[in-house]
Image 1 (tube, each protein chain N blue to C red):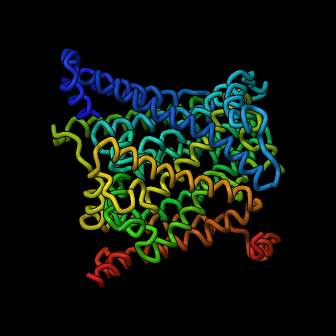
Image 2 (cartoon, rainbow over the protein chains, first blue to last red):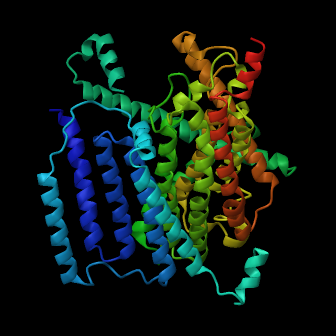
Image 3 (cartoon, one colour):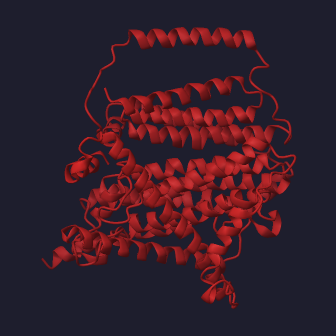
Length: 176
Length: 371
């Protein structure tokens, strides 16, 4: 149909897949993280192609602004500055390959067997509908997810908090 | 953009043979170039104004050598940044070191895309405008973290970590303080939000005066945004006196220039969002900008918008040179213990107000008393 749109689609899809491959094979974990950034951005681009603008922005906000920053923080805090040379390919090759194969099977079976609703309509705003569905039909899953996240948050605060009576406790009360 | 391209093809006869997408592509590139030119000009002139304001506030003259009164200083700075050698420290991580400034600049510049400059002057009126700005600004965090780490320098790493922690913490109050304006307009599109503050009310249509909670949330947003853009008193990632210059300490030449430009770009985006969300955007007091002839409506509304936005920028600079820098723990306490609870309380207040008074603001109620 529309030649340039197809070209851009293949470029975005190619970027997503190539970046994902790089995540798996790069020797340095930080390079993997940067490749992951491009993969996330590519997925956001694919959402734009499906005219799911809200989802695309959420993809950037949650995955790039949240998950990826957490990954980087974890690497910075857990290694020496020069110690980020641990890459993905060095560990657990066989189990990883097995898991990937199973996952690929499941995903491709789902993709092939699902009757997708093909809609040829143009671009429509989705934000209001998403909000309404979250507040009506999917209210329970939405609330359950938020309770789960809250529990995780409280757990993290408990784990990272110093023991009572430890030297830092006084400092914490002073707000230092 | 497509509609504009089609109307252009119809208006100009010799374009008939050109496919629509080609015209649309050229138009997109042209619009992007115009916005980029505006952004770069603002960032250059902004740096000069910042130094002049600093000079005034600190009772000294400021730059006064290049051109009359030093007004050409920013051009000299720009030429200097472009011509200087772009050094990479020997022990730095080369690819990441080279890449980081681009993330920061792209994250900052992408915000300009949805800035509503006038009635019809907006690069792309996305219907998720506000949300989009929040989303693309997350690239800045990645860039700052990578710049700090890849420099392989203690100060840079500390600055990068501080910057990222600060931006993440303050993203929450910024987002929550924006929501009242979104709720009143019932849309995330910046043009819709600006239009919802229009009409013949003059300044009383502004979201700022809609109800007490929106008035308060303007100040919450301004404070949190000041912190999110790393301005003094929240400029801990740069903190010259302790971290030398923070995450950008190892950068030189044009790569340093990218950080510099991004900082001023962020400043303008924050000022533009403040204007659009709380101060009526491009609405001209006592006129319907949309009913004026196209060219006058756009010119006037552009002038009104830029006037408001530049005033906000000046206030940001004023704050920047007036208040001392706060400590890291104070910074985190301000965000997590004060700003976030206050913005939540405020959000609840605005929601209740809209529910109880059926979406009417105080000025509208007073006006309805007098018929």
